[in-house]
Image (tube, rainbow, N blue to C red):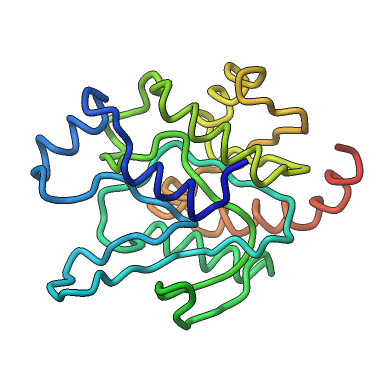
Length: 212
């Protein structure tokens, strides 16, 4: 079984050059930037111009929480984008993450909490929609699930939920999968709805875990 640092290294050095999501990113933003982005992994600061690579982790997995959030794909915004920061703040308000705000494992960590990842690892514009998930991304997600061994999976948005249902057997998901909003939608339109929905998720997590 891969450790999380090993798995992050595999994802950031993904060999699939012909992946349509990677090609889309390269066409739009040039080939000098890393297309992969991880909530839980050491992402590079795009403005770093020094000999030592500067990295940050939005939400480092705490190694304890057996809840796994899965979103469709990372956005193209720099660092954690505005929607990402909104989602992180919602998780903080409902007590699912705790502030860390210090360097750990050579990366600046914003929060620690549950494991949060994406189906597709390359960044892209949300309005482009979600097409078929590449086999390589399914391979990475399967490794993430095996490493974390969650007792509950929360799909962020209908695209994630439907894809997880379609690939459930291939991914080896043997626990309950529930759906909530993708945080980008309420961030743009109805922020209070996301907070209300996530509070309900938080209130029911103990019961859901006991039923899984």
